[in-house]
Image (cartoon, rainbow, N blue to C red; front, side, top):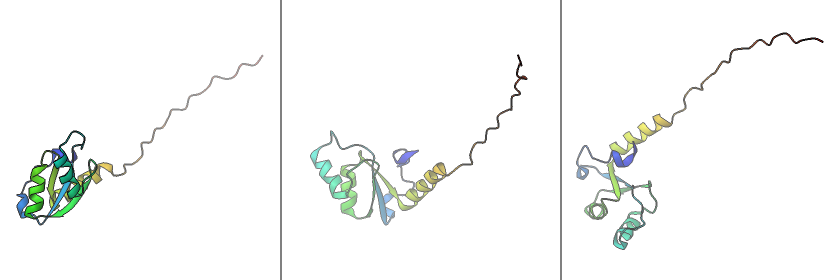
Length: 109
């Protein structure tokens, strides 16, 4: 599913004490101001997540780069990690039983 598809918050972000911010778009082609904002948030590579306290300054930084990041509450992040762990869980091996073929009797000369 990915973080980008499930980034719509069920509860208002302002109610959460901590925010999980994930960079979902690349940096090439972005404005220098946006790159510096992402650097201040601690985001340098795609699909990396940082945890920040929910303050007005952090929310302002997120608002500035909102098309580049996905923001989740703690409950949303844990639910997504649980779903992804279930997908990656080990599955039982597939056992294939081949039929035995009987060779015709060897010809003697």
